[in-house]
Image (tube, rainbow, N blue to C red; front, side, top):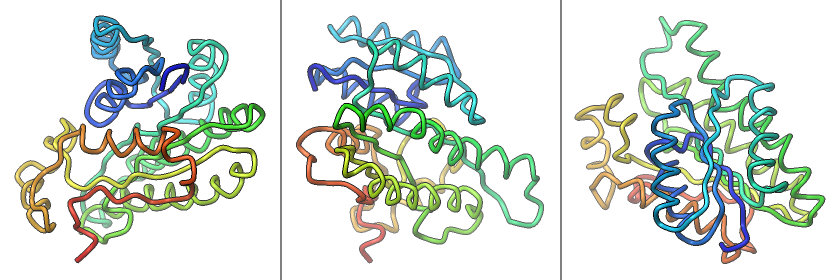
Amino acid sequence: MKSKTALITGSTSGIGRATALMLARRGARVVISGRDARRGAAIVEQIRDEGGEAQFIRAELRDAQSAADLANEATEAAGGSLDILVNNAGMGSGGPTAGTEESTFDAVMATNLKAPFYLVANIAPAMAARGGGAIVNVSTLAAGLALPGLAVYGASKAALDLLTKSWAAEFGPAGVRVNSVSPGPTRTPGAEEGLGEALEQLAAQAPLGFVAHPDDIAAAITFLASDEARFVTGAMLDVNGGRTAV
């Protein structure tokens, strides 16, 4: 990863944080992005203390302009070019379809779908012009498996999976690889707050039967972002303990 630059959205906690640390430990210069400046500063400090390079950019990622602004700031912070983009920032939403507020629907779609779309629109062309790059989208088990109460969240990520394939076809001829990682139950602050005890129950339904650590998902993302995966594009990598294998 030495000489590589990476932008990881939603990287002040959970899977994004683990991914930023893992990429930095492999030598990449990372741009941390999120809404919490305090947590962002703490991760930057940790990476620098370990001898790595990192910067934090605060971003809400709720519309096309915020995505374009982040793309521009991150490219500048990375020294003029980005080699890796990890679309990890996401917004969860649970509950029955009836009663879901339009504002909730719009917010989930904006964060989980619109923001990645416009980040790729602003970053992938420059990767293509240089002849290479790697984009990894973070999806979810709920994108391919119907889970009650997760209709809006699952739909937003299922659409992101389709974009993964579309972008792989669009940018592949120029050397840009685009893949998706689909995590199962993972012990992140957001998952623990949103699912509570159901997190353990959901994990128990998979053959491996345990809740993943963020590093388990970060390892898959790091592989797909690395040159070791140079012949992999348009792939949906399930990292869910075997839940979709049964």
